[in-house]
Amino acid sequence: DSGVTQTPKHLITATGQRVTLRCSPRSGDLSVYWYQQSLDQGLQFLIQYYNGEERAKGNILERFSAQQFPDLHSELNLSSLELGDSALYFCASSPFGSSYNEQFFGPGTRLTVL
Amino acid sequence: AQTVTQSQPEMSVQEAETVTLSCTYDTSESDYYLFWYKQPPSRQMILVIRQEAYKQQNATENRFSVNFQKAAKSFSLKISDSQLGDAAMYFCAYRSSPLDNYGQNFVFGPGTRLSVLP
Image 1 (cartoon, each protein chain N blue to C red):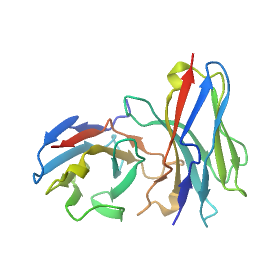
Image 2: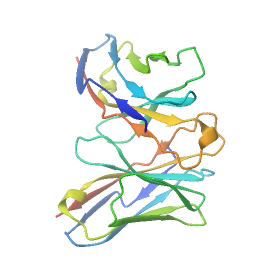
Image 3: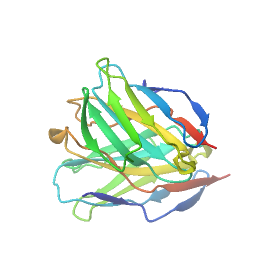
Image 4: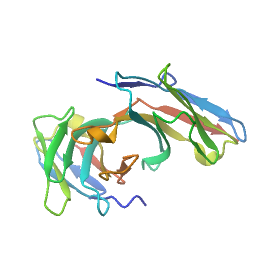
């Protein structure tokens, strides 16, 4: 158990809908990262937040948005969903000041768009 | 921008044998960190081993060790005494030095699928 939690574990929805994925980082971690992993693909970095502020943006679509709240949990909002958005969405957190700064991954949310 | 390449999409190894997974990366930075992550069928991402670029000594974690060649920008993973539970997707990852902690992301390679044959 990495200490990072993600809810829900599974989500099935229809095209055109909007969903929200939630992530709680490890206690004390200030950075949260979101990744998308499509079937049999590598991880695509979406966005990073550090202590409530957006710090880095990757290949995140305009239909997607995220935020990090004062209690450091983060939400990834996906709107106008398309079939191609079906994927495993990972949240990861990392500490500040660690000598390694490795990321600790949550179990992921599997999104299926029908 | 940094890139990470894993040239072996799939590999297989006999149980109890040794296998080496390749990873190369491209960067202009001198200080950075490298990681190997394992993703078993459960899809959980698990950190296997990590290496600081300024350390010449190769990292070792039990049956897992790396061969870090900074000049060649190579970071291979060796798994000794392979076990059935080692079967997974393995991802090589790069990140910049923590001095540049803000606005940095991890760059992952495309992965190598490892099968362990009984």
